[in-house]
Image (cartoon, rainbow, N blue to C red):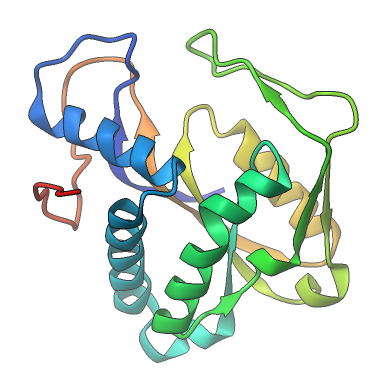
Length: 191
């Protein structure tokens, strides 16, 4: 699957004095926590990217946020964000058609980003909605890409065509910027 990340994210276990990595960490955690300033900032960036890439053809596509640990977290983190982005970018919103049952316990305890699926965790997609749609997946972080690929397969199993994934940040494991700040200029965040 083709992926595009806006920033590079250096996990906390790696020490850095790089102000861009520090600011990206703050942004990622604030977005995950649903802080309004972070949600607004990320929505602005994603809208600019989508409208720049697709322009008037954006309405042909569906943006869907990748499932997270529980429906409650998914709703808190993504539903308002997805509604804002899709309204402003004139793209279809698929996030309301994702239902999560149970709870997934994450174990991010190594460089491979191993996630342990808990008993009873299941993601249900509205096949009637997704069938025949061209989908772009959004998530806050990509590490190995395994979670995104699994979600891509689920979407394809209900008849969607996944064009790729758009990620706020990609996990890196060294303190060295490698073209992470592609089209968006870094700016100071203010709470």
